[in-house]
Length: 326
Image (tube, rainbow, N blue to C red; front, side, top):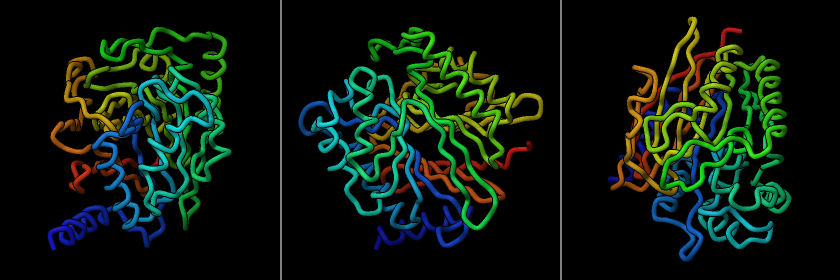
């Protein structure tokens, strides 16, 4: 009875922005799902988050899932035949409602291993979609002419890796400057070319964060100006193991930063509360007594809602993004 009531409450809250029976584009946003390199190959948080994702997916029938990197802790995978694909992914996200397209990018821990093997795994799994290190993802909103564009980025190739994650250091600079320059050109061209109703960049590293790693200097300098120049809706990221919403404004345009990194670990640090622009932090959640969380997103022609959900089903926070003025 209690579970039924919880489902009803959740249904009511989410349906304030639209339900799966209406014309909308729906998707889940998770980050840092990467399990463990040794038995049992997953954490209680990963399992708890996966179970709630399945409940939400059963209720709302999302079209796809975005995964924000650190797909395998702590050192990625070795080859396309690595057992981690089964132990940490396929055998965790088993519910039929999660057998929908997943769109992935790499995190710093993935780059400790073989990212090209993760790309190649797209040929082995019907739901694992990882066509290249960076790529464009374009989605139409059903029942309308509206759309959402995602510029899927490899922020490690752009900014470098971070070394010992326990030190929470800034990326060290790109290993290959030419490769980074080519990706920056791709990002700028993609943003300039987009006429979508909503436009997001998607990368593992955050632009801004109040938590353990804080803002990413490379992206504050390189990406944020492009987001404003091209009137992008925002940036989605993981890396910090919590849930956050930050928002900045400049010249009458608002950029939203959606951070979803609590699909496997939770870190309660707020070490960088004073490192972000004043007033930009709108929401931060990192309850280490819970089993993780993720974001449910729904886009219509008139607005786009992001609902932050804890693994028990509790709705933690909700924010709305409006169409771009281009």
